[in-house]
Image: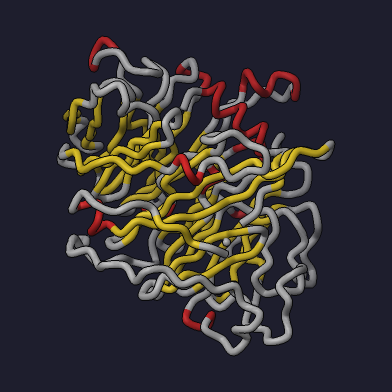
Amino acid sequence: MCKKARAAAIALCLILAAAGCGKDQAAKSENSSQEEIITSDTPTTSSAKPETEVSYEEFQKPFHMSQDDTFNRGCASEKGYYFMGNSYLYFVDKETMQSTILCGKPECLHQDQNCNAYLGSISHITYYDGKLYYAAGQEQGIPGVDEGMWNLYAMNADGTQKTKVLTLRAENEGFYSNPTQFIIHKGQVLFLSDLENILCVPIGGNLEDAKVVKTNELELDYEAVADSLELWYLWADQDKFYCFGNPKSEQFREVLYEYDPGTEALTQVFTVPESAETGKWDTSDISVNGWYIDQGILYYFLSGNGLYQYHISTKETQQIAAVDDPKHTGTAEFDGELAYINNRETDTIYVYTLKGEYLGEYGYRQYASLGKGQEEGSGVGHIIGSDADMVFLCVENLMSMTQDGFGMGYTYYYLPKSEILSGTGEFKPLSF
């Protein structure tokens, strides 16, 4: 996404009334009369298992595939998936695809902040080493936590025992009040903090002890923010951290930096190629249209051109597939197996393997028009997560407009990977 579009997206996010959507095994509690439960068809298990087992002590790459913070609204655990919906957190069982609100209080009506599942307007959540982590700027009902601070919180997989882990940003630091970006990987937290600087600190550490990974070249004049803001997206792979963004020093042309937490070295390892090298594409010479890093390989999409892979250590680039069909344009999300090209004009996902094989298309227009009084296709959809068995779609619909801003609603859908690999199936709804 280009700098202006991403800056506009961040500005819009500041006025959105976003909401969110899960519960681990403990979600199967006695208060079934109060829980919102939906039963979908039991999914077929994919035979395409990853080569290595999933580690829940590492960064969850497949649930951070969207380079839009608004859509980092889910994560996976050993037993299921968690999603934000309407300010509350929901759990989806892996075996049955049933959803339950993440609150085990028998008497709870799930209508206020006293509910265990209530998290408020957050858009970034992850699962790490048996606990759920999220960033919030509002009071979370924890004694000793000051309002106005942006903190990292943890809670048990059943929604109990919310605790503050780390202050991400002190009150009034930086231009934006919503520093949702953070990642947890092998005991370290990488996050955006004051003035959009990127910091790294061990879990349980303090803000003042954090290492500065990268300093943002941000002008202090608030009126000039739109012209000076460097926008970064965070990542982790193997033993390294990464930040992909558009520094002023490169005329806002996107570059990838690699950070080694052992040596504290920050190295520029990739720059968006010039159109003279690869041919014309939608955002020539400025940005890629989606990317993903796995096992030392950067996968990226140039809309109107093709899918590529770049070996970070050897600096070798290879085109995975020439994608010249005019319909197969837009942005792309990736996981370790597939690339999902998202045409926002037609609300259609075109799926390729990372070896270049085209698998088929999946439309979601019927879900991108659920806003009250909104035109068909007016919503925004992204693939937001996957594992060996499932792929998840989240659609953001405009639900209301008031003098206080916009009200957004989020709906979720899943598609078994086995159906994608066989060229069948369609997105099925999850209800919360």
